[in-house]
Length: 114
Length: 110
Picture 1 (cartoon, each protein chain N blue to C red):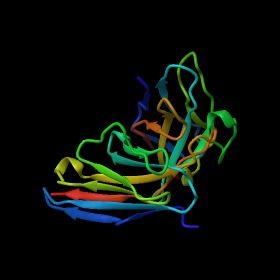
Picture 2 (cartoon, rainbow over the protein chains, first blue to last red):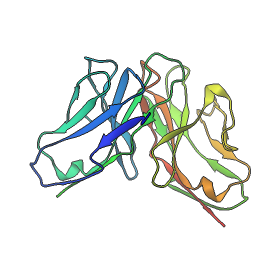
Picture 3 (cartoon, each protein chain N blue to C red):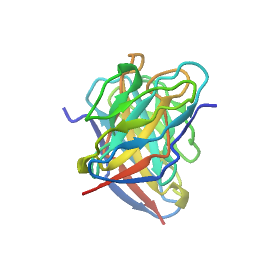
Picture 4 (cartoon, rainbow over the protein chains, first blue to last red):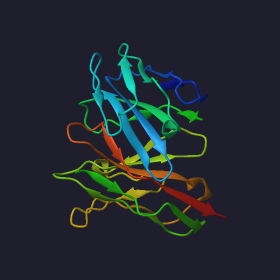
């Protein structure tokens, strides 16, 4: 039981390049989330998926797209990377609808855009 | 709008000293509040939630609706408590979709 797995762990991009961050969970959770973590700002929600087949915008969705490929996988895509997207990205999953169900986080992807 | 405020970026204490990490929130209704912790080189994980009224690793947190606060406390800090602590509450519509505060780094010195 690996929990939430993110790949890659590190990535450096040049402005304008594209990439996809991968996330998979093996806990049979129905909801999945992408957050970015920036110094002094905590974690901000980019996109989430309450269940397979649905996705919704969070606080800071601009410049990102997501795909809920199946129940296990939720990917985050940067179509044209910008320096402002330099951040640590965390994927999380949870059991939507279950009282007090905590979020389970991945180890994060550290992205630098030059 | 929902908001979580952690006023301290860094809290530095000596081992054995009491610790209080502050968290204030704005929320319409009765909030469910959480504390998450991130130890060095580890993933973010749930520390405790107010509805459970539990003590985890000696930490407790009481919801004060009058002051809209959910401060995290521990009477005697240990070096292994050094970590980044985040207070969080749900967006409207579900427990899982969380708003996080900016975080407080706790440094416990020997």
